[in-house]
Image 1 (cartoon, rainbow, N blue to C red):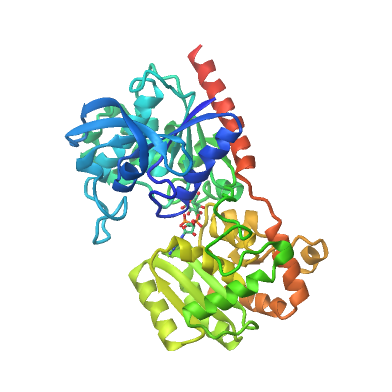
Image 2 (image 1 turned 90 degrees about the vertical axis):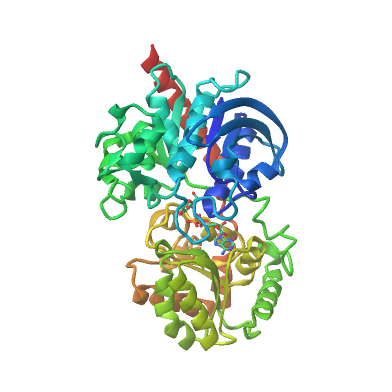
Amino acid sequence: MKVLHAAAEVFPLVKTGGLADVLGALPQALIEEGADVRLVLPGLPAIKEGLQNRVLVRDVGALFGAGTVSLWLGRLGDSGISAYMVDAPFLYQRPGNPYLSADGSEWVDNAQRFALLGWVSAHLATGELDENWCPDVLHVHDWHAAMACAYIAANPAASVATVFTVHNLAYQGLFDLADFRLLGLPARLMTPTGLEFHGQFSFMKAGLTYADRVTTVSPSYAREMATEEFGCGLEGVIRARGADVSGILNGVDGEIWNPATDMGLASTYTASTIDGKAKCKASLQKSLGLRGDPKALLFCVVSRLTSQKGLDLVLSALPILLAEGAQLAVQGNGDAKLETAFKAAAVANPGRIAVRLGYDEAFAHQMIAGADAMLVPSRFEPCGLTQLYALRYGTVPVVRRVGGLSDTVVDTNAESLRNDQATGFHFGPATSEALAHAMKEAIRIFAQPMVWRQIMIRGMTQSFSWKEAARQYLALYEEAAKSVKIAFK
Ligand code: ADP
Ligand code: GLC
């Protein structure tokens, strides 16, 4: 089975969130299951730099106002996985965030930038750009690459199967109708049952409508996406796809997230040498200027600061957290109001609350290892990876019962404790009261070290493996490829 993954991010080269972690791990897991896998990525500065031994596959010519476009094939540094890179300096050679300019607004030419990624992905998938390799399945991730599905739908000769994975429905790639002409797609696609979306056109709809199969990153979010509450206006489109939509849970890359081998920690540890975690806590408290108190429950947050993540609820629940004698360490960046409010809380509560604004991959490991518990109060969460990393590191997640969070964390109650299944704490409504209640419950159990230890160890022994996810994707690829072949007979 030959599979081409099309995406805008890949860990460790370009990462704004969990999408990059998925592209950094899933291809390798598929290869280990016997698949022949390649990636296609935009030629962003870090990707261009990180692609090794690259050779020119083809000069594609002038496209999407990019001047000249060329396609290269090389290997991704760490893994050695083969990746195509779309080199279009005029569109991609820009510093900083792949989607946003320095002032935080979308790049004005994002329609062209990501249409190009979709166009190249589609034409690679139909064998028109590389005569030496042609995939059976094109697996497209998020809106950035989704237009590939429209280019394939517009080509009556294309027989490649397509799978579209939604990592986050809230980012849809919406553009002015006037820009549609820049895409070179037939006007017949610009209808309400095609790409049109309330007077604009939508990249996300290209994936949702034209892919042979649609997946998302947890079974619960697959169901939630079809509801008005979580569907971001696309619930009707998703419902119309019926059984073509499914959820496959993300995994954890155990090479990168493993407390037994994580050399960036004050001490490595396993479930049977869990005392090493106390050293990580003491070291984290010290480096963040928190009181060196082993008995204070240290909560952490490692997150983008956006409304999705529900961190305003944490801010409102701070008085309770402080009254209960707990501590909080936050690492995140994003929304300016949230950044300011967290910084102010840290200034007002020295030794109790510490906040690091910014993105720091290495320190994220130290935070997750050193904290006792992690707060993930998301309003919606397609999968969520940080709570999976927390579980692996014996850091007990306190999560809202939503999406992938409810699929991966087992709430602590009398029954789950009795059955030794408890791995964290849930709360329901997106309110600070409900979050505070769950935090208080965590603090109450933390005061019973034997019970807390049981929950930590249960969490550490959970297996969220990419192997399992890869097997499910492979079964889906087979099914999608078969359905396309039948349609072509
Ligand atoms: P999302 O993709 O919605 O942001 P996930 O939980 O799936 O949420 O993935 C987030 C990823 O980004 C994780 O790998 C997490 O460790 C990382 N991350 C988020 N914020 C930061 C930060 N400020 N510093 C370092 N890593 C971060
Ligand atoms: C998105 C989602 C997150 C998910 C990640 C990787 O960014 O917000 O829940 O874990 O993609 O699939």
